[in-house]
Image 1 (spheres, helix red, strand yellow):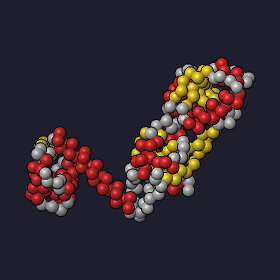
Image 2: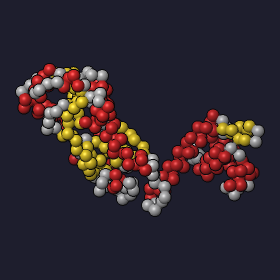
Image 3: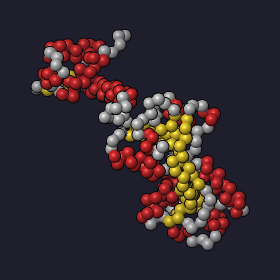
Image 4: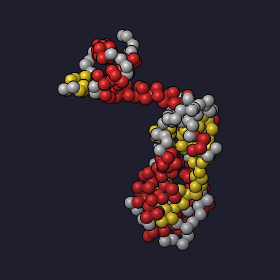
Length: 287
């Protein structure tokens, strides 16, 4: 099968967005007959009609809409390639961010807020497991990965883990559940929502061992969004950084217990060494 001619595809894209063959021919400085020939050749190659006439306008067929969607993505990718390699370009390529699926949505928003407020660059956010995201980072499919742990050396790759934040872990819940004078009493008598995230879980297990208590664990949760939801529904007290429940705490729906758990969760922005890093990365991670 012959390969696709991208000149034909580009001319099709121009006509599709204009909706008028004559106007496109004038704009691209090409004879209308030559432009029509380019479109016909593409239709023959694909085996489908791409346009139907509606008065003076050209309307896309169903296949035409499918082809236009692919054409837009193909040429947008080409534009991003040029922008990535041309460090003097006015238009920045999208920043592709990977975030651990269990990571607090509030933390992700706080990290990206400067970019979202400035509106100088589009952000593409992908969530997943650490292994999948780091593999995508290593293959340059992502620009940065947000996680709570630095990558293991066993994964290989020239990773750099930048610690961008560190937050104390506390106990958060509805006011009625926090009326205990002693931490040990609270842990033994109130249902607890405990994340499975390793640093929090390890710190929590160390805490209850040190206090010599058997906690009432209502839920082991691997998603901070679910920790937040369960705490909102008063299913128990959440063991988490305050940022996870920032909105509920600010509104007064939930409160934070006045106990120091001596548990800290760190947040990392992981990058990989590359000759052409995204231009906003250095400022975003504070280097």
